[in-house]
Length: 144
Image 1 (tube, rainbow, N blue to C red):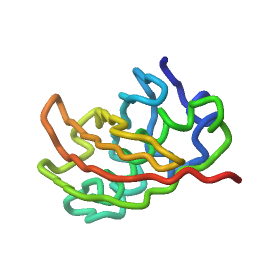
Image 2 (spheres, rainbow, N blue to C red):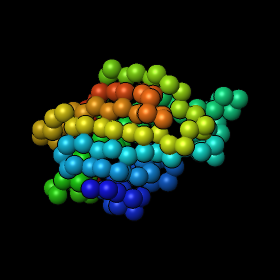
Image 3 (spheres, rainbow, N blue to C red):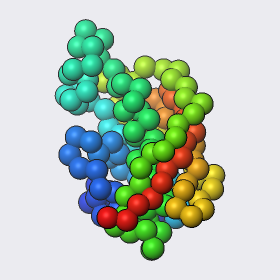
């Protein structure tokens, strides 16, 4: 399954500047998601995060991974319309600076397990095919 922004909005409740995924290139419900965030110098965080050396803050890199990891769970028929919150993050690694010099931030996430509304997942972000960041974590699904 592929998701453009309109379809991402259907499943994912983040909007505007806090939606950190632009396109989902591949998604298997309950299993994995691949996608990207387009990068350009006009993004709000580049303008304010060290203007003399603009880069994406590590917390926003983690947010990209979290939002993408939530989609394989939020696309399950019983979970449509629900929210997912990050509840843990571990083994965080930030290996390459995410800057506006790159066209896009490629993302891939995997669901390791999903039981009783808790997902265990991992993810990685890439710039031109090179690993930029990786993390493991947990998310909790909630009803609105």
